[in-house]
Image 1 (spheres, rainbow, N blue to C red):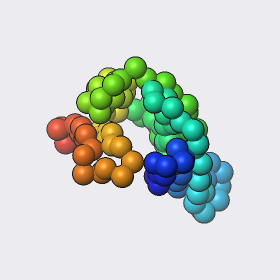
Image 2 (cartoon, rainbow, N blue to C red):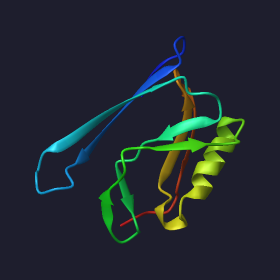
Image 3 (cartoon, rainbow, N blue to C red):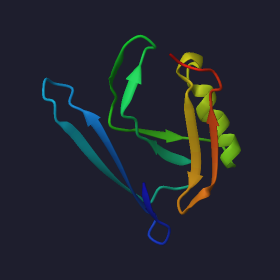
Image 4 (cartoon, rainbow, N blue to C red):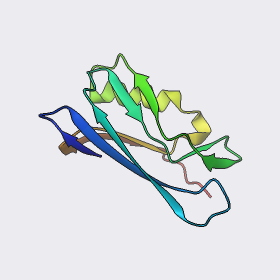
Length: 109
C-alpha cells in the first residue's frame, strides 16, 4: 500500500493466480480516496474453507468501531475462523515501525 496523508488517497496492489486455466498472474491495483476514520478496504488474494483454497474477491469495504491499532487487530483476529488464523498486521500509512502484528504460535505442516 502507498498512502498520501495530504490528499487522503491510498493505492493497494495484489497479485493472484488466474482463476482460469492460464498460468499467468493477474495483478490488481486499487485506488482509494477520501476514506474516513472507521472505514477501510480489505484486500485478499485467496480465501479458504480450511480444506480448499480459491482466489478471493478483489476487495471488501468494511467499517469498524475500533479506536486503536490494538482494538482493530483484535477485531480482525477474532473475525477469522481459528483454523485460518495465521498472521495479521495493522499499521498507519507511513509508520510501519509502529505496526501491531499477531501470528499463530503453532506449527503448520
